[in-house]
Length: 200
Image 1 (spheres, one colour):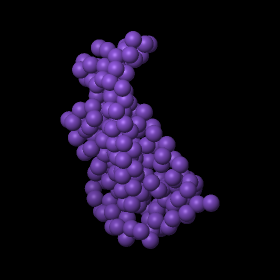
Image 2 (image 1 turned 90 degrees about the horizontal axis):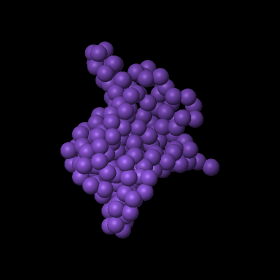
Image 3 (image 1 turned 135 degrees about the horizontal axis):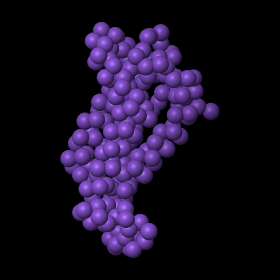
């Protein structure tokens, strides 16, 4: 049994306004946003790699923290993957008669919450525990990713807002829990096969 949320009753008018604005902007801008929406998650993978590479020079604790970031992102994604079929909200591009910049996902590829927003904001929050500078960059990119998903027409604003909240909450809780692990854990792990990942 699922909740079968009808997203248009939540913020359908705002969704229509954003999609209408996308139709009235220059084609080059729409093209940039569409590319970012489709492939921008690769930037977060790059930021995680940079964070880990730099953290190895700071010590095993920093390196272990950086290595936890992708695991935390996967955990956040798993949470939304459980929620999606329970809520079973149709994509707005399927429920509302609007031409969108991005092809509408197939039926059964549910809209709520946004996986892209979840991944992006989980990465941003987790990266703050590695480097404030990388965290700020990732947060700006996460905001752009969330906005782009509405702009191209595949998500309602509330899908993105909830996805962002879930991703941020999961990342904060997981990274905070990581800090409470035994202090000598990084040192012990550096004596295992994980050493090349923890020591520069």
